[in-house]
Length: 109
Image (cartoon, rainbow, N blue to C red; front, side, top):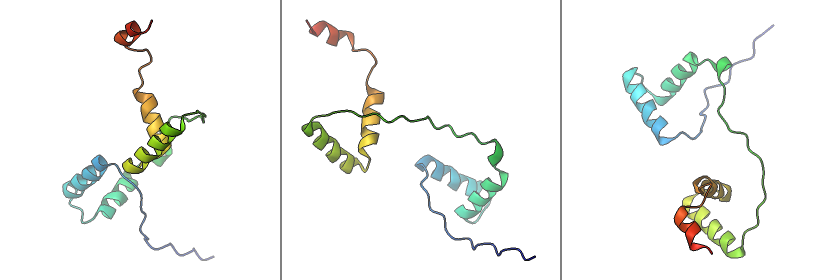
């Protein structure tokens, strides 16, 4: 029986946070490696994928109603920031305090 030929080392493109790109560059110098690909191959060789547990938070879809004006402003901001509308709504919800500030409460009567 013949073994299938291994695929060539075609480029694999993915996004990294800038901080991890910097760490990769430091590891390249620290390990005296010639390329970022060598850093990735070394990291993968030492990585225990079997024990890896992703830290993703589960998501739940929700539906909200917003005004046409807010929707247009949101779409414009998303385009300007190269982000999705969902990312902006999540960021806004994360920044919203669970309780209003005391000064805001006193202003209501």
